[in-house]
Amino acid sequence: MNDRLTLGPDAARQLATTTKTTPQMRGITPRYLLRALPWVDVESGTYRVNRRRTFVLGDDRITTYEESGSQHVVPGDLREVPYLRDADDALLAELAGAFTEVTFEAGQVLAQEGDPADRLWVVVQGRAEKRVTGRYGEDALLEVIGDGQFFDLGAWTRTAAMPYRVKALTPGVALCADRSALAALADRDEGLGGAITAYCDGDTMTPGTEVPVDLTAGHVGEPDLPGTFVDFEDAPREYHMTLAQTVLRVHTRVADLYNGPIDQTRAQSNLTVAALRERQESSLLNHPEHGLFHNVSAGQRVQSRTGAPTPDDLDELLTRVWKQPGFFLAHPRAIAAFGRECTRRGVPPVTDNRFGSPLLTWRGVPLLPSDKVRFSGGMGAGLGTTEILLMRTGEAEQGVVGLRPSGVADEVEPGLSMRNMGVDQKGITSYLMTAYFNTAVLVEDAIAVLQNVEVSNYHDYS
Image (cartoon, rainbow, N blue to C red; front, side, top):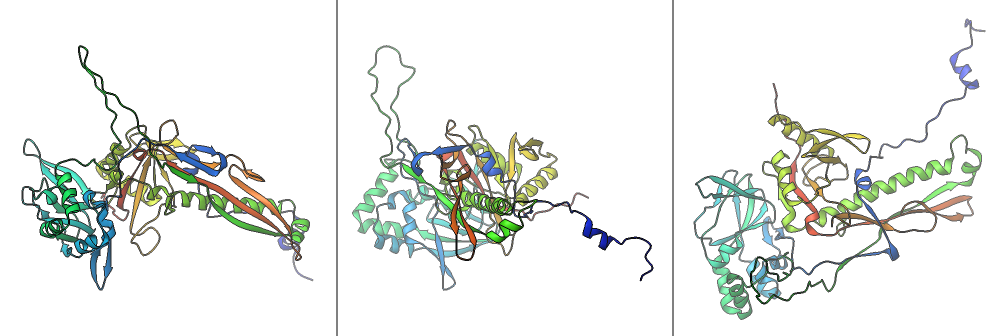
């Protein structure tokens, strides 16, 4: 016996039916990149991008490495210098050995405008700005340079005066090579000497430019018109389908007995599909071969000037992808940092509804958040520096497109299949879950990136 006067809640619950949710998953994100990219159905798993012939273009960076506490140039990466592209390995190794390490502090002038360019500088770590005196004596910012970039190759090669001055924005480390080291190698190697002479005479084409089409315009009379043709690349790049894959296992006892009101197999497959799509978005951004961050050409990389992403930085990105820019893509913390910089300047970005959500925009271009944009140089999530992408999309616009197969067996979503592999002797049903995908940048100026973006800068508005 007890002194209760009514039926208790615990006992009453035994007669009640609960209202259930489908299984929830914290790792599901809006996946804006997958939603914003136009998708091309690819036949036979291969997508070939035919382009007009261009001159060879590297990544405009000289890689360095640390050994025994000091920095060194990777000899093979000296082929980023146009007249060293065909140099032999021994020569490159000797030139790489001529670089000496130099440390600098924020505010230090590394090279002065008008001084002899007797050293080639390779920035190992840090950020610096190139400035020049304008036509009317004004101070003009040319460019912000960062890790791996070098200056000034033209003046150093010709033993000319520095065309600009370089001032460090942050403390850092650089490697420097004297002009005498190059001169000594050129005296010994006729091939290198000839290549340097051709470079100094302007006989070499600028890397990354397209083979010109001969035209004439504005003429009068009956001059002889030039003949021409448009040359194509002999070996255009082909994109093959990559994949994300797993085997989903569901015990037949679970599927038979505990299948209502929620279908167990469907619930398992839905969450697995979501996980595959999350991995797909991460791979499209960060894969070392086809990831978008690894397919930005040298001239499309912009260094943040102060670290924090400012309106000036995003405007600079828009000058690189000025033909029909589609959207920015950034980590949520980078977007928040950009919002703080706008607020500090009194120019809060406009909010617009895209994809069913309110999103910040800049110059009418939305900033899409993605937690797949990685940080580098940090000790934990959201620390260190990150990057911001800007891209143009669509085949007709010669932009960025997503690739997927035109149709696969047992397809449950476009480009994603769920194939029944049968039941084993333990009564477990296995399903092969596969997502096929890739992405292609049709023309180099369809994508640009803002690098070395810091997100830990806050302001006191009191």
